[in-house]
Amino acid sequence: MEGLRTVEVIQGELQALGQQVETLPVGEPAWMVLQQRLVGLHNELAARQVERTELQRQKTLHLQKQHGLAPHQAAVIEERVLKKVLAASQGAGVLSTVSYEQYWQKRREGVAHVDIDQMARELGLALRTIPEDQATTLHIPQLPDKNVSEVNAMLPGVLAALKDIPGGRYSVEDTHARAYLDGSAPDITVTRVGRDVNSFNAVLLVELQRGELDNRHRGKSLRYCELLMRVNPTRGRALCALTNCESMEVYMAQRELGSEDGVIRHKRSGPVRMCSGHGWDFIRQLLSRDAHDLRLESPPLLLHGHHVTTLGLLGSGRGVAVYTVQYNGEDAACKVFDTSRAAAFRVELAVLTAVGQAHVPGLPLLVTSQSSDASTSSQAAKCMLLTQPVAARMEHLSHRNIQDIFTVLIHLHTKLKLVHRDVEPKHMAMDQGTGAFCLLDCGSAAPLSGSSVQLPDIAALRYAGTLLFASDDVLTALESSEFCPPHPRQDMVPLVKTACVLVHSRVAKAAGVVAVAVQEQLALGASNAIVGAVRLVRNFWDEQLGDTPAGSEWGKLVTAAHKIPEADADEYMGAAQELCNQLSRFLCPG
Figure (tube, rainbow, N blue to C red):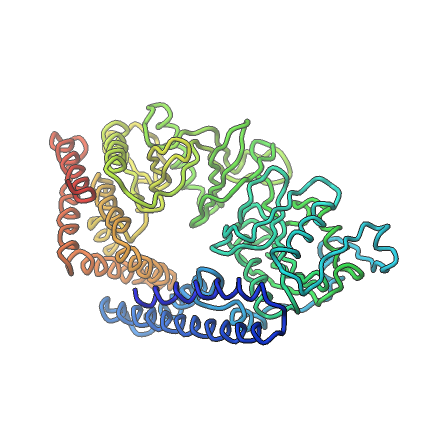
């Protein structure tokens, strides 16, 4: 915790010094002193990053010792875990421990250096050099000098120039104080008119710099493009223009066609003159084109032969992505399934259909659906489920939340006679309009004895939920490759474990590490991969539920959840309500 506090202090100093540098003339002694101080702070941040990486390595080695992994398995998992940790933590900027300059130095070899004309041709633009004596007649703006204040002079000047570009397609916003991009705040964000300013909707980012273009701002521009691609897995390209009003460099990330999760190539144009060279012509032509044609936004979804525009990404997982869309004038959640998840689509469709007929509170309501063979055009349709409300993941649990969750699960178990079988933190959501609880993702549900809901046979044969939160009977069956009959405990145990993770940040951080290790263990593909993954999960919870007084209390709740009887037993309702009361008291003492 002390290391984290130090990082926050350093970041605060960096912000304060950055504001001071902004007020000083470039090159003056005071400016040089502050620049040297900034370098020292960035180096200190880098040292904190090294410490964090080493700590992560030690945790991975601890996993190996505690969970009995074979050396070659541990080595593979350690390498993959470290790569993921570094990828998540090298984000540079306000919330990171790596300076943008260091980030650029680490990534620059993977960035192709191309001529601006080549980049323009890839985008379908035909640039022309603009003579200075024709700048006025061709509506070339008179931009500020490169040594003026970014915020007070450069930003207003560039904003005004961009807003003067004719076309009416796009909105140009000052976002230098809006940290909407993973804790970072691009100076200018261009979106379609009428769209919210966020990382999903951004069409073009503009990063301003006072003085000569440097590696710190190059790293920032590169990182912005990477973040835009990460936030929107169906975006084809991301663009960021770096300029000091005299010169401009363009940074582009491009996803290879036909691959949502495939390779992303990064390119950087050489510097061009902003107003008398190709710079302004590039910007002007770019904003005269449609973002969809340029692959700078998600393609519209094809639903029943009609295009549905995506407004944001709510989440993504194995072969699925959930978007906010507007359908018939109302916001809805659209879950898109890859062909590999067709079985999950059929299960969830059957459950949501039954939910709609039974009016189950706390579960999404099905608006419409589309199977993969529903397309009547040459463009293949994907499996989709449109539901309401649009719900966002819960970050905290309250007494009311717990009561609502138990109400949903009890209704599922006793009325529909179904087990959700994938209760975990990311499926605990809240209606953004009313604040009501909503349990998401019924694609792993399985029928209990006597259920009238017709599910695909595969739903009863295999466990498809998240391994980290599974009950003991599921883990035992997976270890022995046996069938595990659906049972209410397979929801109640994950619920208690989920509550533990949401309440205790220490457990949540440790769970994140183990979750990655479990995924990589399964990815090894060995015959005993599932056995090793189950061992990781068992040992993790044994450690979390027994090493502290609080952990022991949570352990008692997990034990009680394992003892929940069958849903049709006389004791079920009393046992479920008692577990609800115990968990409520544990979360909200008094």
